[in-house]
Each structure stands twice: as C-alpha cells, then as structure tokens.
Length: 155
Image (cartoon, rainbow, N blue to C red):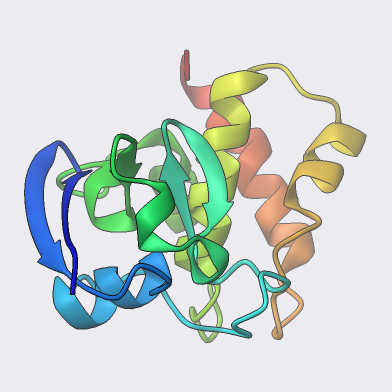
C-alpha cells in the first residue's frame, strides 16, 4: 500500500492507504478526526465537507491519491476553541438540532465567506444549497451566516 504525506490542520501527517481511499475515511478511520461526518457517500449531502486549500469540498468523493500536496482543514482545525466567527454565530443563533450536519455546514459557510464577505441572501442560500439538514434548520443557518458577516471581518 502506498504512503501519503498530508498537511492537515497545519500539521504533517503520514498515512498508508489504498490510492482510491476517500479522504473522509483517512480522516475518520486512520487519523481519528471524527468531526467530519459520513452522510451519503456520494457527495450529495455535505456532512463530510472540509477545506482543501481553503475551498469547501466533500471529502467522501476525493481519493487520497489526489490531494497529497494540498492543505486540508477539518472542523477540528477551523479554530482551536470554537472561536471562528462562523462557529460563534452558530452558537449564538443556536442553529443545531441533532447537529449531525453542522460541521459540514460550518465548513461550507466559512469557505464561502472567505471568498465573499458581503453576500446577498440569495448568494448565501446558493452557497449553502449543497448541504442537507434533516432537521430543516435552514432559516437558522442563514441567520447564523448573516450574523457571522455582521460581527466579524472574515477576510
């Protein structure tokens, strides 16, 4: 089996895995970083969203062999103490119900706001469209994104 050197949350990590192993399973099974969730396995729900070089990607569909040079950020690496503006807004609005999708939602929102710090409501909805929340917390998610924009400088 091949070995891979990955940069995850600012640290070099070495893993051995089949080349087609999805990043999601490397994070969860090999590195015990379980904040990134398995939802559908076909890149449709967004529960597995992480940042790859600051862009939100669905880690269940990215093979480990395609990312060796990239910088990966998981929910555990977004901030040390949950102090990223999006995380703080999530808490203030009390977005989560069951919470299963929230790491993916937060990772999607934080990557989006890094690219567009002054989005319209429509742009927020469009950016968050690829993340499914079974509890239907979409209105609170939108409010939290708006609050993150209002309370911080995300650039």
